[in-house]
Image (cartoon, rainbow, N blue to C red; front, side):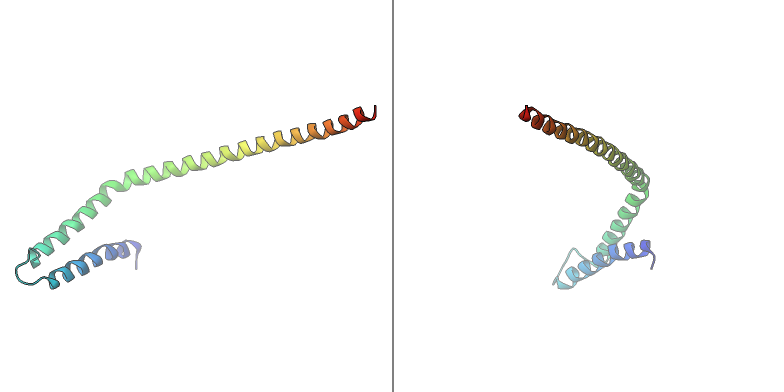
Length: 108
């Protein structure tokens, strides 16, 4: 089954199941007659289809831009981490040099 058919099935199936159970459980006069139910299902499907049609491009654009921004942020974070590691290495060397200088001063 294609993903589009699966999505459509997963959207329609609960609507039909819940609506039919609500219709079946009602006794007497109900606003959920079969035509009203059919009309609501058609409206729901039309709304989902229109939203999918009009929102597909903006959503794809948004997510592609967001992915690119995350990749840039990760690269920048890697560069900052590398710089920080270099600075830490320099400070460790300075501390090691200070320890040797302290020992030398203590011997004098």
